[in-house]
Amino acid sequence: MADTAYVSLGSNLGDRQSFLESAVSELASRSGIDLLSVSSLFETEPVGVTEQPLFLNACVCVRVDRTALQLLQCLTEIEEMFLRERSGRWGPRTLDLDLLLCGDQIVDSADVILPHPRMTKRCFVLVPLGEIEPSLCHPVSGRPFAEYCRELACATQVRRLGALVAPCLADR
Image 1: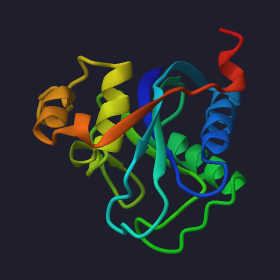
Image 2: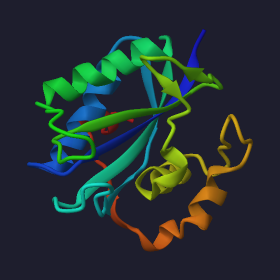
Image 3: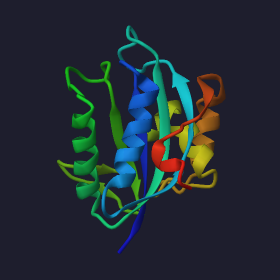
Image 4: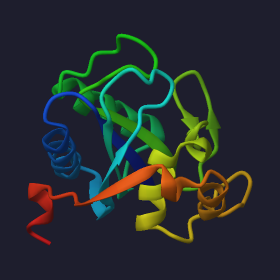
């Protein structure tokens, strides 16, 4: 059974745009994962630990023939390919891939929590997500993500830089 999943991407170390573009290509190359849409590229202030470089963020929508846990494991593998180091919560990173939603699954386990528990408080997630799926609603609250975006005044907190260009998108 295929599910539609949404993944948030972020980077604030090294060649940020290249890391994001390469991560999208790597994700699209995996069996059981079909890339459906990709947001624009956005620049955002760091959250939590603010004394670090600005982030580039994006969001993708994929169709998956995997469980949420299998998809999360795939995302972790891709992060490791790009030398992601987990040196501290909310610290700088070459690549951060967060599973936001997987179908209408609501999961709260030691391995995965869906929907992502902080997504409704993060403009760097809400703006790219809203760009690729404007009418999407939170599976627990039923509220459109656009409402959360308006409440946080996200339009003032992110800067759209343009298209995210990944090699896998050139064939479309």
